[in-house]
Structures are given as C-alpha cells and as structure tokens.
Image (tube, rainbow, N blue to C red):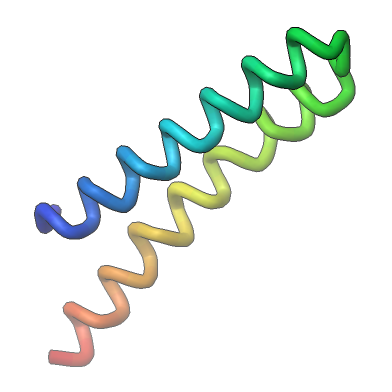
Length: 57
C-alpha cells in the first residue's frame, strides 16, 4: 500500500473519530451507528481507487 493511500486512510480515520466523538457528545447514537457502518465502505473505496489506478498502469 502506498504512502498516499495510508495518508488518505489516516485522514479518513481522523475525520470519522472527530465526527463520532461529536455525535456521542450530542447523544446522537443513530449518527454514531451510521458513521460506524459507513467507515469500512469509505476505507474500501479509498483502497479500491488506488488498486484501480495501480492496475491501469
């Protein structure tokens, strides 16, 4: 995995941690659940985009 993909995944992680923490503070368990469910799909999208670029090269 390239450093660029790692950086994008770290950024995604940081964004989701912040969003989840805010949702918890607001008592928005529905939003926490949605964010937790969406995170793996977003991470996979980032990795898949990298694989598509790499395969095309």
